[in-house]
Image (cartoon, rainbow, N blue to C red; front, side):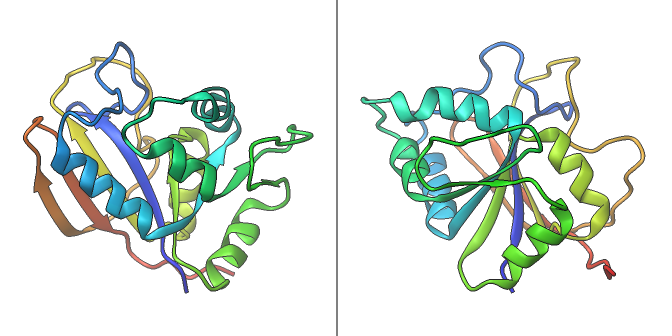
Length: 186
């Protein structure tokens, strides 16, 4: 079974909706870039909610001077956009998931392949956390206090996570990876 990983960039105070410019992909921290590149190479599927998909699709396919490798990765990876309102997805390798999300992503996990990553997509992540479908939460904690915004974990979700990895980078970013407990699904 494939691993479903939620990867998020988060502030010290737990917010994932960037306000200001604290998160901007760049090649300034080579070790951080190498780590995110390795994570990308371990995954062959990217799941996005509608809003994050729209943001990504309006930006990344048009980048021509991207030195981070993100554009190339996003063009190649299979993308699954969760939406009941999206009629078509023109970005290469994109499939619309418009049925029962837990069942469809559960079936995707059962197929052969590499890791499946969800990034951004806070509404989708909030809906999936209590289902037991998410195996790993990978947080890139930026040394910024934002004070407000959307949080990764909604107030009504309680999880006992097991620390898998910590890594600090020259930029002050810290990677924290946690395995979530298995929850039996019907």
